[in-house]
View 1 (spheres, rainbow, N blue to C red):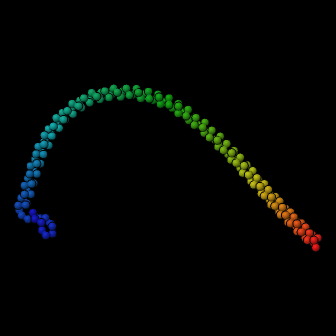
View 2 (tube, rainbow, N blue to C red):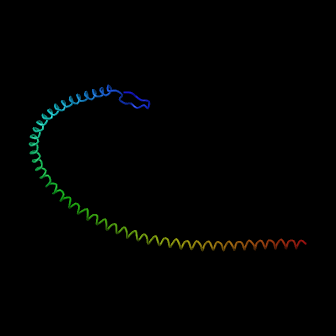
View 3 (cartoon, rainbow, N blue to C red):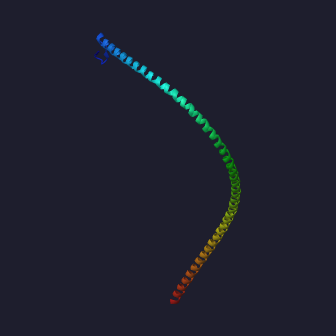
Length: 170
């Protein structure tokens, strides 16, 4: 095999091709050996098949045991049915209890509605207090105005006194 100037490998001679043929023959011989191994393996599997037949016969006996066991389970199933019937009564008790809780829930709803009315009363009361507070503020403003009038009046009296004192001094 040679590589040309482009870097591509190619067969150049029949010698290269014959070497490749020898590799193929050796590979085929290996496959022949592999085939012999497969035949031996198949013979081993034949023995294994005989073992399996014996095992199936053993399982036949085991199947009889399973039937007896299933009959026992049948009895157990009857016990389970009786137990389930007992649980059925318990389920009825739970339903009655849930219905009682439903009534209790209705009572809680009515109570909450009553509290809603009470909340409305509180709001109205707070609004009344708000009005009362506004009246007090107006009253305080009136008193503030009255105080301003008194201050002005006192200032007038003071001015008046000063004027009188000046006139008296002259």
